[in-house]
Length: 239
Image 1 (cartoon, one colour):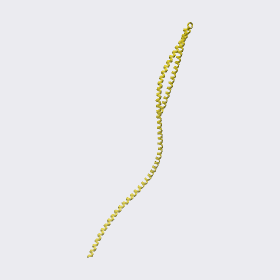
Image 2: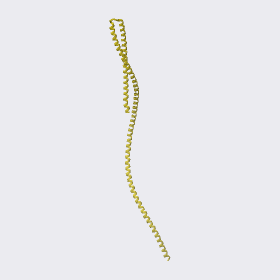
Image 3: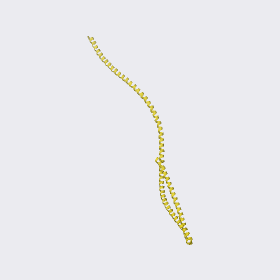
Image 4: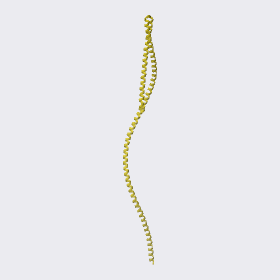
């Protein structure tokens, strides 16, 4: 975009230079016209002098005698004037030829300048169109940026709300963790008590088994004793 912006003044400068060339061509055309007018004036003057010369020569032939020298002097003066006029005519012709050549060059330069002007105009229009497109793209980017900023602000609010909620959850989690640790401690204590109870229960069951076994043994022994007593009683009765 910066290159296009810098290029536009250069193209506009070329347009101004082309206009200057056109002004120069117009000036050359005016000079040619002036030279042509001067040439026409000189030619007309030479023609008038030629006519005067002819009239004087005729007068000399008609007058003769003492007036001849005067007429001859006038003829010489007229010849000098005629030579001077012819010299001026030749100089004017050279000037016209030179100016015509310059005008031809100027015409070619004008055509070239017109071509350059057309190319420069097209290039200028293209660069202006490119610059306009860049400005439109920049506007779209700016609008998108504003939308992103608005969305960022909205998301920032949502993020802050989420972070706030997260902090609350962290506090709840911390409280729950403390409660969990406390419950685990209570469970460990209950497990220990349960293990103690189970150990006591196993011990009691073992003791009860021993007692039951001893009781059964006592019953067997008591049973044997009872049978012996019965046998003794029967023997005595038979006696």
